[in-house]
Image (cartoon, rainbow, N blue to C red):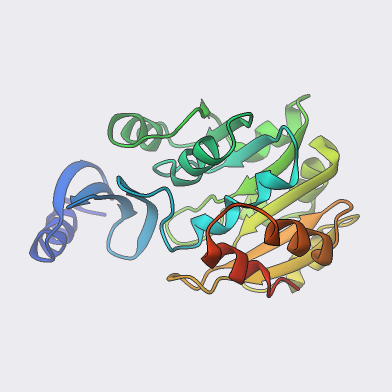
Length: 240
C-alpha cells in the first residue's frame, strides 16, 4: 500500500470520527470514544477493544467460551492482532495459561503499546513452524491468523492439522476463524471431529471447530451452563 493510499485511508477513517493513534504501513490503530481498533487498510479489522466491556458483540466473543471446557486451560493462539481474544480469556479464566504467536513484529509492537492483551505471553514467530517444532501441549489452539483478508496458505494444509493434533491434549480442540466452509477442514483434519459455528453476532464469521474427542452436543451443553454472555450461548446453541 503506497503513501498516497495510506493517506486516503487515514482520511476516510478520520471523516468517520476515528482518531489515528498509530500506523505502520497498511496497519492502523484507531480510537473512537471507548473503542480502540486495529485494521488493515479499509477492508479488514484485526481487533476491536471496548474499554468498558470485555465482549465485542463480534466473532472474537465465540472463542472466549472454549477455554471454559477445561479446568485449567492451556491455550495457544496463532495471530495476535490487538489481543482482543487474549484479553477476554485472561479476564474470564483466572487460571488460564495463554501463549500467543504473532509473525509480524510491528503488529506485536502496536498491540503492546495500544491494547490490553491480558496475561498473554507473546512470541514473535511463524505460527505454522511453532506448531511443527514445539514440545508443549495445549488444550485449545485458536487460529485467527490473516494476511490481509485471507488465511495464510500454510494453515490450510494437512500438515498444519496433523501438527496441531500432535500438540493438543487428549480432549483438545483446534478452533479456526474461518474456513470458507467446513468441508475443507473435514478433508484436512484427519482424526478430528469437525463441526461449525456460524456467528449470530455482528460480523457473521464462521468458526470451524476440530475436536479430538468432544462432539458438538458435549460442547453445546457445557457452554450452556457457563457464566458467559447470553449472546455467545445463543450462538453455540446452533453448533453443528
